[in-house]
Length: 246
Image (tube, rainbow, N blue to C red; front, top):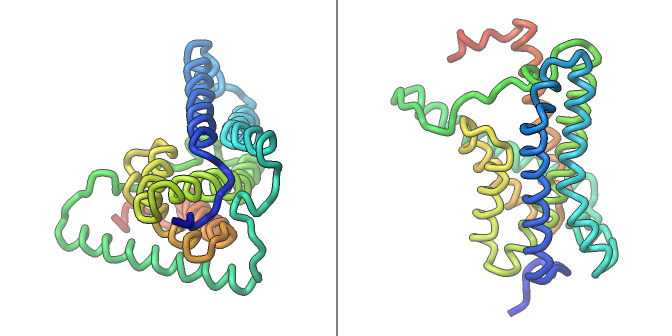
């Protein structure tokens, strides 16, 4: 049976990349905790710069094992990571369709919660990113760069360009999408928002499956993060009073 994405990675590559990535992340987390670096970052006057360094390190951990194995065994080509050429008009159209669907699903879930007064575990408000990065002009610029530009590209290359396509070619599109979305939700380590992130992951996966390209996924991720970033700024500036909404 012909594989849907025709990715270059074999099962051994998949296992090596995933477990190396997990191992590196655990090593960094444990090392920072044992060395006291995590507490130092929280209280440092250069907190935002250190946090940006940590985020960039996380990005490298996601990409380095993938790029190393790919370059060594298959060479580095954009198409291998789902970066096939797409017309900008098509990317914008697919991105907006996916985001509208996400808003529609979120709306119906919100209506259900409001009218039933049922609190769904894993479907609460996310923590403010400014609790981590701060709210000075420099901190806002650096945080925006990370959240809106760097994170969408890095995460989509790994989760959709690599993981979704590699897993789907082995176990099928449906289960490949579900497993990838679940890993994507857990990766963010915000259990109060695990359900909306899982739903978001499923929708982004569908964009990639339909187009065989991750450009709409990157576009979706950029728009979603930009809107969430803007809303959080409006909240801390007291333009939006969240207590009145909820």
